Image 1: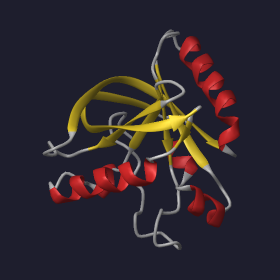
Image 2: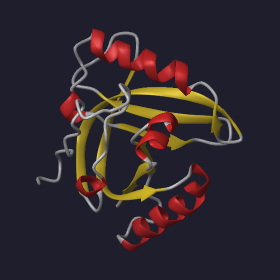
Image 3: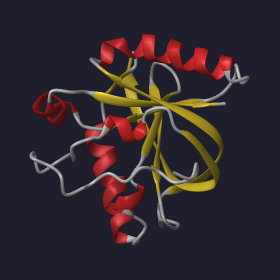
Length: 168
């Protein structure tokens, strides 16, 4: 697979009517290079790192992406990172500019690793991704995480897959 193309998620493979089934093998160990990849940037609030308004922000952004014709199910990706105990940043892949939303472009090379488990393991996953970035020569590389399913769907499927992205 070329290193600038995301694995395709079959959006029709859903038993829940919500999140599609996730294929961890397609996402693990990738080297992805983004060259000014376009995203909608949204911010959510948290209380000691626990998000409180994702259920409002995510549907808003998704509906704006669809209304603008900027949503491509073959390029579906939401990268999230913790900005502190009170806020998180989320980057929604976009095919073009979305009116009324904060648009950003992301460049860099990222390596991925797929994790499966409860969100309480996030500290361990961050440490593992930081170590991976250090091993690859970028100790200050940005970390993002792609939460592949909502908590309800993760429970249904029996897996809570989270893809770590470390800038290398």
